[in-house]
Image 1 (cartoon, rainbow, N blue to C red):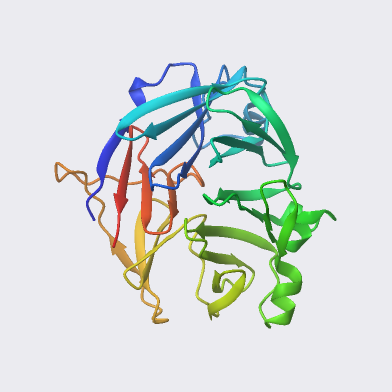
Image 2 (cartoon, rainbow, N blue to C red):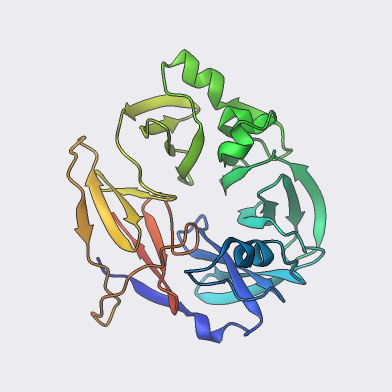
Length: 293
């Protein structure tokens, strides 16, 4: 699979630490960075080192994104959250979210204009052009007693839940979400889920069940769907699996546009991101993207 290099990490300021990698409505990368936060520790490291880094407070958060063919950056005002992790386009501005609940609505200049509470323990957050906000939750959110107990919730643009997965799963004889490892939301509203403990692949369309592949298997923390197959990473290896319920995983060689082989970082939500048919990869030196058909 051929990827195009779109960003060089060496071009970022030295006091920026990458926080997360995601994908916008056009299939382009969204790179969230924290200013003034120490460099992420590289394994092997002890628990104290990780905790010290995790709870160090940044001075601000920055977004590197694409506007047409140009690379842009934006500095979010009043953004020093330790768990700030999610960023997505939202209306004419941006939605910047913490994993522990608070989400800020920002205009295109990076000024905060409102806030939403989308629940604690969010694993992923993806928006659609019509203003829907899809949020999946990890185990601390699912078993924490709040809205995250649904495992997956769709909110409208005002932060009001319009779809709750727990009751939907019961009505459709689907497994309960204990930890939603991965979610892929297309701009048209198709939603794909892969979650612990049974790891089905669930396809939703228009808030209804389109299809379910039971016991499909884990696809890590992100996947793309294209050409009758899923694409994801296992550690630092790009993988593919057909949707005809074949159990055969296929290793996929990732090459840049010069023909050189590269591998993604084995860091959840930072080495690989995807939505719909678009894949974005970070190998620690550069950001690459590929769009499948």
